[in-house]
Amino acid sequence: MRLMINHQTHYVYTDVVNRSIQYIKMTPSTNAHQQVQNWDVSVPGQRDMQLDTFGNVWLTTTQREPYLQMTIMAQGIVEMNLSRTDSNADDLNPKLFLQPTPSTQCDIHMKSFADCYVPRINRANLIRLAEAILAHIPYVSNQTSVHTSAIDAFHHKQGVCQDHSHVMIAMCRYLGIPARYISGYLFVPNSSHLASHAWVEVYIENKWYCFDVSNQLFTPQSHIYVAIGRDYWDVAPVRGVRDKGGIESMSSIVQVLSC
Image (cartoon, rainbow, N blue to C red; front, side, top):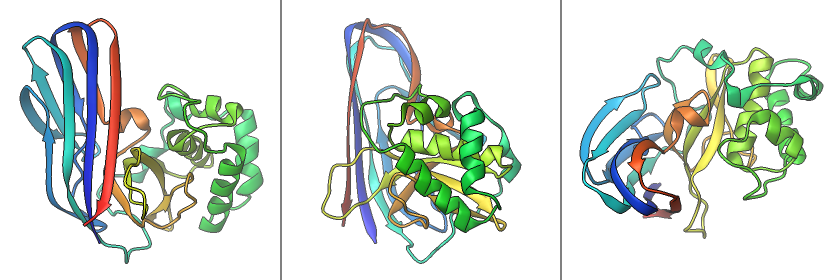
């Protein structure tokens, strides 16, 4: 299956931005699950590309000319391999993904919840846990933000894919299971406009397995992998710093189409 992705992010400011630096992780890599046939990130300014600690493509751009608005556009074509049941193999040490982060902490209630559904560590029980998380935290948009932690989302009982992923990761790490956050896209037939997606990979049986809590998908299907990290902040599509600019407004659109 060949998929075409068009991801546009538009920023508008109430005052002139004198200069800025953007850190962009919007470039997928070729691996056993997917082959990137072409890809480009269009953004003004001077560019520098490197790999981060987790092997993600990390684009740094510097804008030195004043501006009131800026658009970042990532687009390309990816060929999917849908025959795999496990996720991507890589050289990263799974123990890297046992480290709790501020976004993936567990409190006593979450620990009790995890123990209830995973009395023994195996894939079947982890699927039961993922099902229970979605039942406990129904998918509801605009109720949380990127700053919402796993503990906050668990007690708020509403959230989106980022929240489901943080809660699943937090509980897995409490159980002593490496778990990592994946950013990317998911193609759904008959739907051309999708938000960026997030899901989890869990390391059991010496393999990384997909746990898409929001969609209850447990093998990588039309998932386009972009970046891997310990939590959202390791894989955020765009982060940056700027000099002035007043109040920032951001809008984004993502298209994932079969081609």
